[in-house]
Image 1: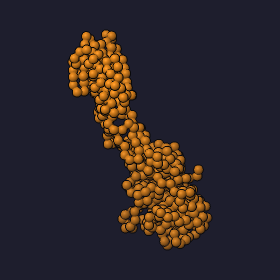
Image 2: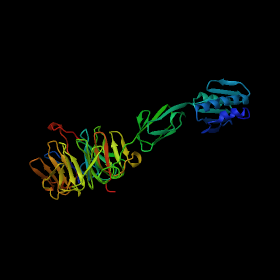
Image 3: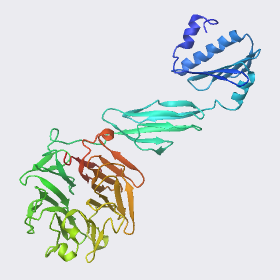
Image 4: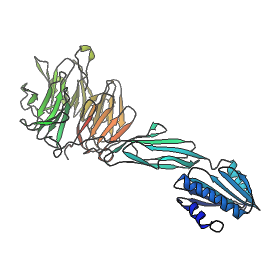
Length: 340
Length: 133
């Protein structure tokens, strides 16, 4: 370029240059086409290059422009054909050809049509690249999503539709404008022995009571957290099962896994299940309390009568070892409670 | 009442006991360590073993592939109807009826991928970490 322009014009034209593509195509009739796609850091850099390359080509071709539009300028002289096209804010395309029909055809066929992908990130993370990206028709383009430290990708929307918490996304065979946006979150707060009042890091059971406390059954005691303060009850040792009944009472089954002793907060509850390790508790819509055991079947306490269901009276051997229980809540019974 | 046992699921309606297991239903395994009922009344369970989660709508069983290699240890339903699954080593999965999203130590800051118990507060998720590890 310095063969036709001053040093300062060349310097101005080439600042911000990088990320280019150069291809040479040749047809069966030996017509050659040199394609140079230049990519610039900023619109101003692309402007400077476009204007200076036009001035340079005016000198080199020694002929007037055959087409002169704001963003597409072309020169034709003795079979040589040069075109410069501003295809995006930061991209300038240069075509140099020995057969004038080639550029005619490419330009007419919309081969160099471009689309815009709008990429944006919410707070606490970034998407790369971002802003309005110009891409050629039929090309692929990949975006990378990166959360800030301590944050995680919550959702990525492509044209407004979620694709989940992906770390990158590639548009394939682009034939339209698109958008991509990412949002970020900090999901989890960790409470452990070193940063909170929880009794132990080994937690077997959790439950929320109606007062807004969260209860944690740990290997070394029962810890209650009201959102600010911790309190640990360790007189029963650890706790393997916690259950909130329909009236809001909290049921705690102390360790070892799992004890026959149950504690309703504030009072001990005993139904004589000595050595019958309780593995699960439930309460049905009628207020019956159900206790599943590991090895001794199921007990139902209706407040008056304790009914024992085992393999003999149900015919089911599997009822002896209960791993989980859940009660269907029947609205018709009129008890006021919800499934939590 | 629904009971998870080492021999499938038992339903008791007050008079009749019904057993659902791998030989008479769509259950994919017989060791049932957790059961939950969603806001629409479906029974959710995850038989011991990788990948499978089963839903029973009182007439048919639907099996979902959780996409993770560890057994589900516990299931919870939040007020919005999302089903949360805590696994023995793969973190927590959320299913909103359409999409399964996995939260683990790598993608969400979960303190440990072994989640023994999930309790859902009014608007927060307390995913309690550490099983035996």
